[in-house]
Amino acid sequence: SDSTPLTAAEYDFVIVSNRLPVDRVTDSDGVASWTRSPGGLVTALEPVMRDAEGAWVGWGGQPDLEIERFENDGIHIIPVALSAVEIEEFYEGFSNDTLWPLYHDVISSPAYHREWWECYVKVNQRFADAAAAVSAQGAAVWVQDYQLQLVPKMLREKRPDLTIGFFNHIPFPPYGIYSQLPWRTQIIEGLLGADVIGFQRVADAGNFLRAVRRLTGYQTKNPVIEVTSSSERPRRVVARAFPISIDASSFEKLARQPHIQERARKIREGLGNPKTVMLGVDRLDYTKGIGHRLQAFGELLAEGRVDVQDVTLVQVASPSRERVAAYMQLRDEIALTVGRINGDFATMSHTAISYHHHGYPRDEMVALYLAADVLLVTALRDGMNLVAKEYVASRFDEGGVLVLSEFTGASDELKKALLVNPHDIDGLKDTILQAIAMPEKERSSRMRSLRKRVLENDVARWSNNFLKTLEQARASRYDRLVPV
Ligand code: F6P
Image (cartoon, rainbow, N blue to C red):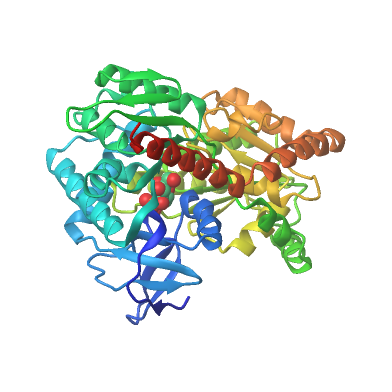
């Protein structure tokens, strides 16, 4: 999409996230353009920013991208540059090979390297400086996610006039796991620079409060932490759950379009019109339990409990963090498993698994959601899982069955899904069969209740709740500043 240069300005509302909503890509002819970034964070925040007049500070997805601020599709973008070494040590290293596995129940082993930590500190300071430079006096700054946990404190030190929010899009781990981190206290102190710290689940906020109690001397009275220091007057920090969501009505709107419904029919036709289409949609990440899902489906085929003529699984796995070793290994494992299952069970007219290692535009995803009788979300740990919510929002016809892992934040809300423990392969297989065979009446009654939840608690409500809490924090802070 196109971009227009912007002149320098200061903003009353600033979002800071590692990744910008747009990613810089260069094609084989060396022509650069901006495309939409992957992941749930951008899905959720893009509509929020579109409705607000503010700036978005973040990285453009390529090394050494020294570009001026610009406007893209109505959003004011303030790029932060990362060098190739910083991408390696801050992004691929500390963010995605230390914090990511640590915060997701150590599904993969976190690597602890002091140089990565030093780079994390340096890059967090750069984001804090960039945010400070574009924020107007008294502005609200909303910092996003685990890549930037030191930014709240750094920003407060530079700009005590700001009101600072932080939202963690991924889980916050139990103390027994969190305490492995050699820099556990610095991260907690970094986060406590914020006025409001948001988490996906009540359990995440509880884990954080426990870590605060174990690592600092601060008093906590859920959800408030009294932060005291010798240099500052005491401050109150609120830490609680704000489960994130999607722009639900925009998915429904797309799903109601005749050309998208026609595309859904074409997708089914292309698969040989099986009785049941099952769907998985994930970033290709070891937290998503894609292997568990394939194993369950493979065993069902092998045991003759499902027939390849009747049931097809479509798996979309969008490329992610491709230079991190654990992701390279996962990519090979999944390709091998898919190849084996197809080799063993596919016929000339029916494939068992239709596997897609790329992302698709929103229209195509909604067509896929409409085409799928069953959505399989089998994550081993997931902060929220917005794909589950996208599926529900798209099914205005009240068709479709959601199979949802208990280890997703979404399972706290979406109780009418078929909840599964993906580690229990036999249980997962039984649930898949239950989903395939579910009578229409039960299907629509479950979907109706899921839809109510998702359409009511959409992303506008999420951001309003968070920003209202931030506004209250600002008000109570100013009250304290008034001399008595
Ligand atoms: O929400 C989790 C998250 O890590 C976001 O912070 C991130 O933008 C998204 O997933 C996709 O990951 P990445 O930015 O590493 O491609």
